[in-house]
Length: 238
Image 1 (cartoon, rainbow, N blue to C red):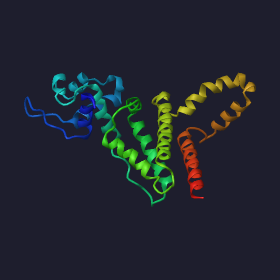
Image 2 (cartoon, rainbow, N blue to C red):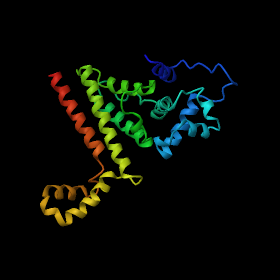
Image 3 (tube, one colour):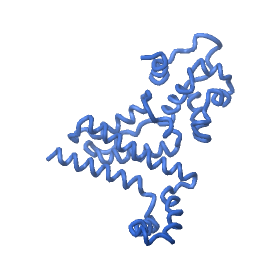
Image 4 (cartoon, rainbow, N blue to C red):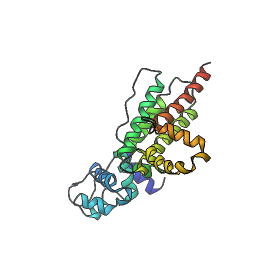
């Protein structure tokens, strides 16, 4: 393991040695992470820097380096702080569908509250204990279903990918939200003059325009994923 990777392991998993030089520590990793989260929540991940976080805490940039080696490690701490505690296992044993549905909705809430997590959680990286506990909860919900470990991991990938995609659409739609409605608005203008060439699209848009007819993509996709898992679980049981 490289020195850089080892530093991230210590930051995320501990133990956390106290700085050996200088005055008595006045900062903590939690304070540093929370300051970075606050900046990212209001201005985006690109606004986060060691200098900005140090200024937010009324410390110098150099003093921050006594706790965090660099921005990559800072972002790793921010992810761990922002994702929060994993939801507890809910429902009786065997209620895998209810548990996964609740898990996915809670994950969506976390991403919606901290949209920069979509950018900070891509590519190979080292997860922290809280993030791994989220994964553990989802995988454990499938205990007793007959699915293999690989299939459970694939199910987790499907769920996370669906939640991320819906939250990404909401972020692209802007503060007003309602991504489907905002997407359909310009299409409606086109359909007024070109609708005859796209009858299936015109009919679908007319249905979506009805009260309650849009912005249900999260639950629709989630239920289809769970339906598919249910069919596979039933096949294994049979």
